[in-house]
Amino acid sequence: MLRLVPDPMQAPSVSIETAYFRASRAPGSFRVVVQGASSAAGFPYGLGASLAGELEQRLRLVWPEREIEVIQTAMAAVNSYALVDFAPEILAQQPDAVVVYIGHNEYLGILGVGSTMRLASSPWVTRAYLAVRELRLFQLMQSFLPRVAAPPAPPTAGDETLMARVAGERSIPLDSTLYRRGLDQYEHNLGELLATYRRAGVPVFIGTVASNERDQPPFAGARAREAFERGRQLEAAGDSGGAREAYRSARDLDELRFRAPGAFNDIVRRVAARERATVVDSQQRLADASPGGIVGASLMLEHVHPNLDGYFLLADAFFDALLESDLLGEPEVSVRGEVARTEMPVTEIDRWLGEYKVGRLKSGWPFRDRQEDYRLPPATSEGERLAQALFREQTDWPRAQDALRRHYRETGDVAGYAHVTTVLADAFPTAHALQFEAAAALIERQRPQDALRYARRAAGLGPQAVNSWLVLGHALALLGRRAEAIAALERALELEPGNATARAALERLRPDS
Image 1: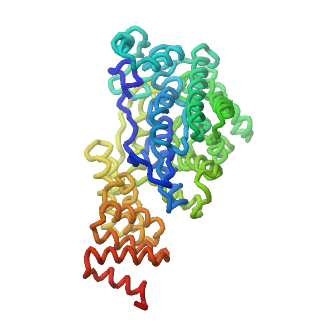
Image 2: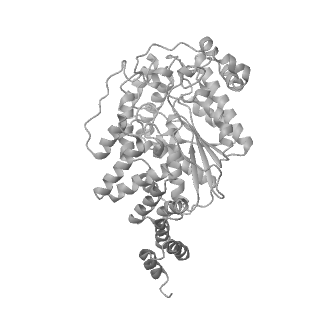
């Protein structure tokens, strides 16, 4: 983050969520990199709800025999400048495809034309800054630039939210000079980003941007509020089409620009056509699933962040586009969308923690005129209790999730135990015990195809552990892959010649021997 902020003292405490991937790609693997801001990063639920987490899960379900890596680079508060800046490092990882979902932070995100964390209101000055910042002479001068060029921050309370910190220009009227600079910034940066990938021969899938139109009143502007009220009246009269247009007009007229205006989706289509990128109409996917075709609280938590159903639909749009591209070839397994939704890699802790984060966010500006105390409700389940401990920073994410899965095991919730164990196993792919436990739990749930990936990881991480080969042999045998199962069980016997489980399994697989 420091590389994007002119004044290090202003840098917000945000970062890319830790994810593991191979330093050197495995032969035959498929690697996707996701770029974007908090809506791409899965806020407030975390990696499991993100485009990266969801796409990796969906792709692995459909191609269980292939190594799939979906790498998260999205993070809060950034806009298109960050995506352009990260592109060379992303190309160094040799992606097969790049997924882009960006737009809401363009005005008020880091280096945005209306942000407190900008070098200047002019996009070309900001681009020049990013181009020369590595030069030694410029580095000597850099400490003076923030005091000279950065805009003054508006007064805020000591417990301000990140939204309050970044909002330097709190009134950017439609078609104003600053508004048009934001359009120029977005179009230029997207063009540079997509051109970089086109020249490198990397396919890009870029999404149209969705926001809460129906249930988020405009933050600022009399004309915006009038349009929103007109939308309410038209909807009450049964005119969904008229209401939809009025709500979108209200969004575009909102002078506090925390939501991308509709013009951004026109820019996405125009730049993508020029640079031969694939447009994913994610905005329309959410609209199609919303009452009257108007995106609102049924899929959105507040102004821009989807709820779990919304995140699933967002990822589903990109998943369908990847399937249609034929980059991975023919699917190995057919998995219905409703099945994938139940397997979304988000635990009960993640879900509750997300609700608390949104509650805290909405207790302050711009949702409230002043910061209000946010109090947690009484916990009604072990998952909620652990989420509250995590929210209060009394524990950390791995310990909370481990406690939850142990609770599920103790109470006989086989499905809950398997789900949380697989989430942990994917979060820590080099932890041998978690891979074995995930495989065993999935076999217990009669899901050998899904168990196979974790069993193979366990055998790779613990080649001297007998149980790794036993669980691998078990999964292969259930899939009818007799020769491979026999080989795995024979390896278990090499390590422990007297192992009764391996001998009994081999006798069943080799009845004539």
